[in-house]
Amino acid sequence: MANKYLYDKKTVCPVCKQEFTYTRVRTSQLKVEERGRDFYTKYKDDINPFFYEVIVCPNCGYTALESEFEKITNDKGEKILSLVSEKWVKREFSGERTPQKALEAYLLSLYCSQIKEDKPIVFAKTCLRIAWIYRILGDKANEEKYLKHALDSYVKAYSGSDVYEEEILLIYMIGELNRMLGNKEEALKWYNKVIHHPERSRHTMIVELARDGWHSLKEE
Image 1 (cartoon, rainbow, N blue to C red):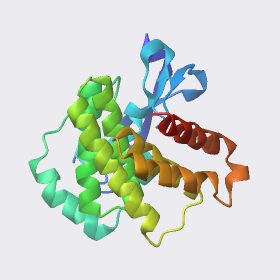
Image 2 (cartoon, rainbow, N blue to C red):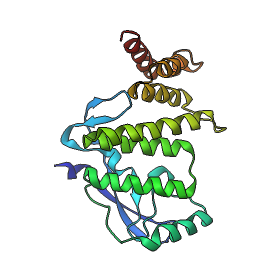
Image 3 (cartoon, helix red, strand yellow):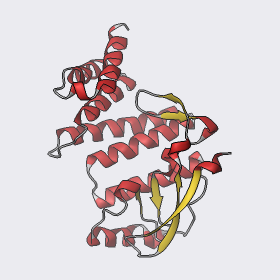
Image 4 (cartoon, rainbow, N blue to C red):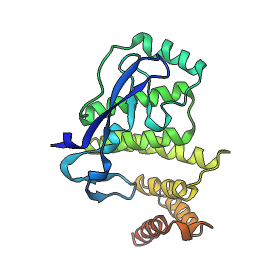
């Protein structure tokens, strides 16, 4: 039963200032079954920790990735109140999440990200995870749609002015998503950037993944 991995935390919503409970996962107890090249990870006991990476305020509907939840200015909070909260029907997102419930949370998070005008990297992470949920649900068309959105956002993040500590991972994801979407030449180009990146010696796992991807395309 997946519940042994879950526990509750309390927080205060930065938009409506009300306290609520949300659910987290005890990741230390998880056992990996397989890991995809886009980092989608399948765990034993049928638990998906990423389902719980999004926090939803049940009172006003403000939703964000946990890492982004507190990052909201007063003017963007006002916009959430007018565009989300006024139409919001109070409902609970704590407890165990089905793929459908996780999808609802992520789509809300994406909408709030648009209102907040989040950085492209936030859109990329959110869209990639939405694609993973559609993969679990066996919905190929929507999986591909959100992989494309994720790719566009990763490219924007890479070509923008922000500096990323994990730049090599960003480049790898652009290569990998291009491969998954059938853009062979683009994928090879970005894999090459990973393989020759000045920081490659610090990221051997990512470089190996890029090499594997490059060879698999060359052998097609």
